[in-house]
Image (cartoon, rainbow, N blue to C red; front, side, top):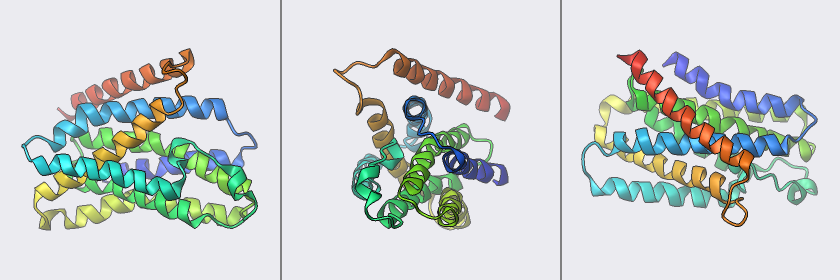
Length: 244
C-alpha cells in the first residue's frame, strides 16, 4: 500500500510543481498530454475496471456508473473543467481570492478516485492500472489548477498549501476505504468502483472529444491517443506478468 500511496501523491506534486516553477503555459503540450492521459484512462476503464466491477451481474452497478457520470457533470459546475485542462483565467482575475469552489470540487473528485483502491490487493492488475491512471490524470489536472492559482496572484505559500492538501486527497480515499473494507460487504466496493468508472468515463471522453474540430483529430492528438491506448495495454500486460 505504501508504494501505491506515494504514486498517488506524485501525480499532483509533479504537475503542481512544474506549474509552480514554470513561467510558461505549455498549452500545446498540455493538450497532447491530456489526450494521452485521457486515452490511457479510458482504455484502463474499459479493459480492466469494468470487467473487475461486473464480474458478477448486478443491474444496480450500471446505475452507479450512471450516478458517477452525473456526479462528475455536477462537480464540473464548480471545478469549471480544470480537470480537463480548462483555465478560464480571465473569469478569476478580478477576484484575486482562492477559488474555493474549484479546490473543493477537485479535492472531492480526487478523494473518490482513491476509494475503490482499498478493495484491491497489491498484486491485482486492475488496482495498479487504476493507480497509474490516476497518476497520469492528475499531472495535467494539477498543472492547470496551480497555473490558475498563480494567474490570479495567490501567494506562493497559499499555493503550496493547497497543492499539499490536494496531493493527499486520493491517498486519503484509499487509506480510509482500506480501514473499513473488512467491515463492509465486497459488493459495496463494487458499487464504489462502478461509481468511479462513471466519473472516469465522463472525464476521459470529454478530454478526447470536446475539442475535436469537425469530428476529426489533428495528427498530433491522434498520435497521443493511440500512444495512450498502447501504453495502457502494455502496462496492464506487464503488471499481470509481474504479479504471476
